Image 1: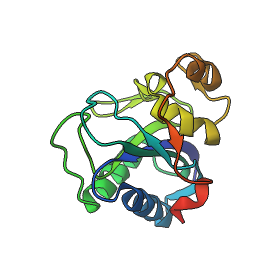
Image 2 (image 1 turned 120 degrees about the vertical axis):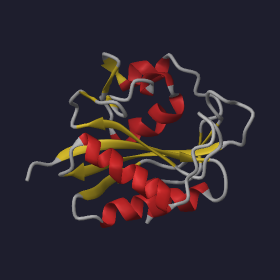
Image 3 (image 1 turned 180 degrees about the vertical axis):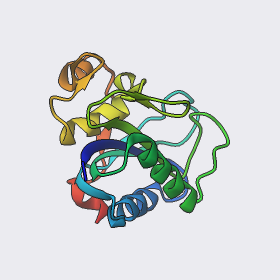
Image 4 (image 1 turned 90 degrees about the vertical axis):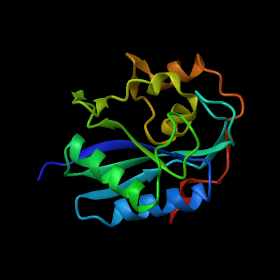
Length: 167
């Protein structure tokens, strides 16, 4: 079977987001079609979009998968549902959020998924942890390091010593 390296963004800011992110990665890693191969440190980050809410925890993970982009998104959404994610408000508080950011470096688009993630290059809370596991990644036509240099990274602080927090 053909495998691809997919990049996932994880976040949450209500309940126990660190435990939910850990459970999500463990559930994804336990599947036959997916294997978590790298995880960034966990970060405290300010809210984005809707700013009158608690700080977030964010991280990124690389996953080797035999699933296509849409099937991987379905796994992420099912994992969120299993962790009691409720979608009440866009960019609002959440117990867990799993985003497919990239799948094998190939563009993809359907009604529910566009890859690479269309707002990834605007979000320091995604790019800072992503840089740890995907240095040199091209984001919006430029190296991730260049894109981050143009973003406000204030308030994005490591909350774990390394990427082993999920084990």
